[in-house]
Length: 326
Ligand SMILES: [Zn+2]
Image (cartoon, rainbow, N blue to C red; front, side, top):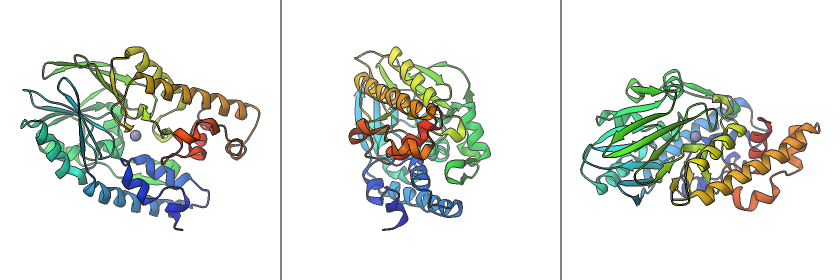
C-alpha cells in the first residue's frame, strides 16, 4: 500500500469527488509517520495529481432558479449568474478544467465572464483566477484572499508552500466588510464571515433568486477542513453556519463549497448540529486533560462517522481540527 493509500486517501476517492486543497492536508497529517520533507513531496505530487484529474473531470451543470446555476466538478462548487451584463462567477475552480468549464459556461449563454468573486484564498477556488481575468473579468475578494495569493502561503500542518500567484490572478477589488453589488438585474449580498474556514471567507447571496453560496464554511455531508494556518476556527465555522441559518429560509437554495452542491437549510442545520455536538465532545475531553492522541482514541465523533467521515477528512483528522480550536 502506498503512502497516499495508508493515509486513507486514494486516487480513486480523489477522482470520484471534487478536489480540494484540503485533500493535501488530509494526506500529510493523517499519520505521524510523515516527515515534513515527505509531506512536501507528497503534497507537491498531489497538487500535480489534482491538476491532472481536473484536466479530465466532467463538469456538471445544475440550473437552480432565476439566472443562477452551479458548476460541479472542478475544485469547489462554482456559482454562475447569467444575463445581459455578462456572467458573474463565484469561484473559479482549477485551471486544468478550463476547456470543460468554458464549455459548461457556453451552454448557459454566449455572454463573456465579466466578474469573479472568490469565496476565499484556497487553490481549489482561485486556481482559475488568471485565465478568468485574461478573459476580461474583474476579480473581487476579501483583502486577506488578495494578501495570501500575493505573498504565497505556507500551510503549516503539512509543510507546504503555495508560491505567490501571478499578477493577473490577484483580485483587483477587495473588501473587509459586507457589501452589496448589482449585476444582471440581481442584488448580490456579500457577507464576510470572520475566522470561519479561513480568515477570508465571503458568502454570496443572490437575493431575487433566493440562492446562497456558502463557500467552504459548509461541506455538505462530509467533515470539513478548517484552515488554522490562515485564521480558520471551529467556533468561527459554527458562528458562520448559525449566521447563514439565520439569514435564510426553508425556501432558500444553498450551495455548499464541497459535497452535493444543490441543497437547503435543513441539511445545513444538520451540519451545524454535527459541528456543535463534536465540538462539545472534544472540548470536554480536552478540559479533562486528555492529550490529542487520547482524545482521538476516545472517538468523540463516533456517532457521526458513518455519515460524515467517508471523504478525505476522516474522524481522526477532524477530531484534531476541532481539538486545535477548543
Ligand atoms: Zn477551502
